[in-house]
Amino acid sequence: MAVHLYGVLEGPAHPAPAIAGLDGRPVRVLTLGDKHAWVSDAAASRLEATPKRIREHDSVLRAAIEAGYSVVPSLFGRLHADDRSLVAALEQRAGTVDTAMALVRGRVEMSFLVVPSGSQRVPEQGGSVEGEGAGHEHLRRIRDQIHAERILLASAAELAQSASRSLGELFVAERVVDSPVPPILAALAHLVSRDDVARYLRTAKSQAVANSALRIAVRGPGAAYSFAAVQIG
Amino acid sequence: MADLVRPGGDSDAMIEDEEEPLILSDLINRVLDKGVVIGGEVTIAVAGVDLVRVDLRLLLVAVERLVRGSIEPSA
Image (cartoon, rainbow over all chains, first blue to last red; front, side, top):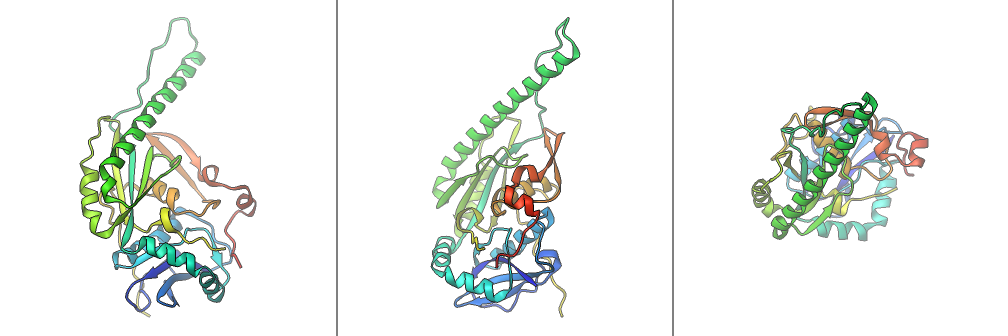
């Protein structure tokens, strides 16, 4: 039976958490010296990545964050043959894991997102021109829509840059997400001290949004996938 | 054996529960290992209008993983 790794955790020794992980399977704890690896079994040696499983993976790590652990998350996407091979792989990379843990100790990741507000439709520019056929009109609408979306993306990027400056003293590291998946128009990942999360949220909420077609969303606190994720295999 | 508890609800401070597509998009941006294929489709909506259904594999696929079609154990 294969093993799925959620992440490597540091914190007070706890009994195995009574929480469900991937596909409802129990989360188990493997001891790695003064750290723990949270894992669960996978029914088969092949595991499809589905939205549900990705959320389950993330939920387990968010539970760990809420319980006060420092978390070096594992990215979703790799299974390990068994506990022994996983522990061996982690021990082989102990130095890297230690470095990652030093980065995330007492810190969490916040996502600053700029998304469409839903309050304004993409404008349809220009009306039909006399003598033009339906095909021309259709193409012009597509052109106008692309133009409007470009303006929206530029505005979203500008808003993210402005927020980055405002939040600058509250994060220790920043990653600008390249080509975020829609409907997100611009995304920043910030590594934030737990002590600064409340101030971060207040500051993020107070960002002025000049373009009514945009709004801000913030996710977190969560595991620091963008800064210190384990990738083994 | 005690009942397993589903890990805590979302503590997202500025995202409502119904914003599932937004949460999923954020997770895809950050959580997936490079090259992982995700199954399913999402509907991308802008300004409240559904624009297009996107096969997520088109966004995330890497050729090697596409051939395999799923994740395999590493060792």
